[in-house]
Image (cartoon, rainbow, N blue to C red; front, side):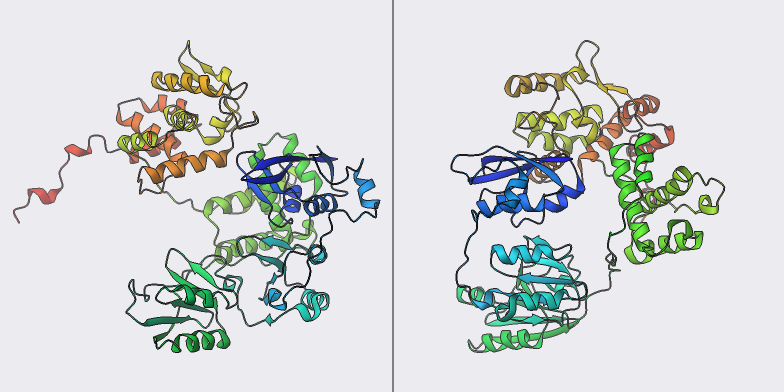
Length: 560
């Protein structure tokens, strides 16, 4: 049975409960149901506030799913010997009474696919919402998100009764809720500077209201009383879902202060908005599919990718037996991904691999026409590369010795982020001046360069942090996380004022390009990067400008 550990800690200025478990999508989906659950990069764990009600909620949600192991902090609620003891207990420890609540604190927004419920924190109400399938707390909008399944609206009305203030059912999409989701609204019509005593009210496609007004605390306080407001810090404007009542309320309020109201009706540009997946994942992936992936020893990343892709596919045809799905239907699904979901060619290729794996590897149907599914034409894009000066600026902007050592190791050896995370202390061979990279992509081992300057930085890092097993360790001695490295790099690029769209992997591209520009043989670069084919490495010949500075444009020879 799966296990989770509950560990009380002091974190971010308060008492928290760490909820630690091995990477598991099912457990992760459960922990997200707890209001206020957050991810801690420091502890590499989910955590919630250390309260009796949260502890009770954890025990109830994980019942029959995982074994709960916990240490009891001082002054904690009664320590039940087992989860069964707790669930069978009639104790009311941890129950809180919310007291009288204003009716205005309850409201419901209805969209075609989802419901957004606002309510104060209350144990009874939270238990009710958790009974609704796939409900989850959305901390960024402070509301519960619930699928608009049959009878869900009626169940909510029945439970809350007169407490529910209002049901707004004229919203066309989820992004109407306080600007939730991608905002494709054209904002060029909004001037950068407002005229004195002018309020700009823009109605976009009768779906959204954009509002700009001269700053005043009393205006901001009044605007926040309007339902589902959202402040767009980047564009410096407010937005609301469009209703006649909201529009009238905004205009009548500012007219009292003799503002000139500039009203507009505009249309958002059609940017080919992606269609969201309109079907669930109730149909589980066949067990033999997952077993086959593990038997062949595919990597965790590949297993995760195939699982997501194939689960989506079988739920698209949720009422059909897998053996009845024809080649035409498979191609229809791929066309849906391209035209409606607007997936990339690389993801389309992964979906084809996941589907073919089932029919060819799991069922062994090698002579069926599933093999004839056409592969997408792959875009030939050049990777982003940083100049030597830009890499220097990034490294110099990092003050933390561990963070500096991580970025220098990735750049100086041309590592993937996963390879840097998996490095152990024993992989740094100082005598041979190489870094040993084991079990890299494609389950291949290789050696890469160990820079003398990197070795000096690593010595200082070792003296301060004293890692035991992994070259780069987290607070509890576990492997450093990829998300933390991404965060370090983003911050370094910001501090170094790098305008290019760069990621940690850009350091690997830059390593190869700088080697090529310094005159290194491309065959050696191929070995250092761990490429299977020289064609993969040859992409860097299209990036380097070595020797091009001696060329002149024909225009320079013209007498004009």
